[in-house]
Image (cartoon, rainbow, N blue to C red; front, side):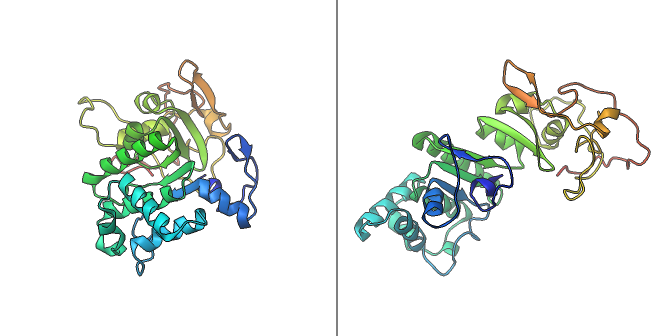
Amino acid sequence: MARLIAQLYTPTAGEISLDGAPVRVRGGRALRRYVGQVQLILQDPFGSFNPVHTIAYHLRRVLRIHHRGLSLTEIDARMAHVLAEVNLTPAQQFADKFPHELSGGQRQRISIARALAANPKVLLADEPVSMLDVSIRLGILNLLDELARERNLALLYITHDIASARYFATTASVMYAGELIEGGPAESVTQHPGHPYTRLLIDSAPDPDRPEGVQRIQDTGQPPSLIDPPSGCRFHPRCPFAMERCLTDSPPPSRWARSTGRAAGCMNPGAQLAPIRRAEQPVADPTATPH
């Protein structure tokens, strides 16, 4: 989805809109204008920089590409401003360094500053904290949240950590095997999940506040092949609550909690259904981690 929004992939169906207008980019100046509005924050902050160039080089390059006609003094002033926005001051102390001379958290802040330098409307943050130490993840998430509010940015936060999604996101969407299976307000989705896969994600996350003795959903299989996905509901080979019709019928996303705008692609969302027995199904490994 993020690659489609960033125009790295060409949509084969459907439509992408920005500010209510359909996006039709075929390259050249139109693509440059578009990427100035939609910027990426990548997962690996070290791998996203050229190691033989300074931080100043990377930031000045963005400003020259997306803000033509600026003098070197104006470019340096804007560079200092975006570094201050990500709490890296004094600017010159960081601008003259190479990527390897900075910590992981500082490099990710530089990555955010580089995206902000284009003055975008949309940020696509692909696992922005997964490569960082646990002690500094919260600071980066708080920074992104603050920048999104101050600049009025739309922010797509991609993560496998549903606990951070609960903390950070306003609206949460859960995908499985290439399909959207649940969506709604983040607090509601993470506190009262309607799809068994969402509940499996939550049960697999450490939670010191989880009451003792609460029964967790057990994983009963492996992720499916995206080349040859299973028939019916794609989650049914792993679902402990699957019914016979789940094996053949693909459930459409249904609004099962209209008061909160919740939707889940499940035959019986939010219900504890009796599991069916399948002889070919392997014995669940209680230590397995869901993907």
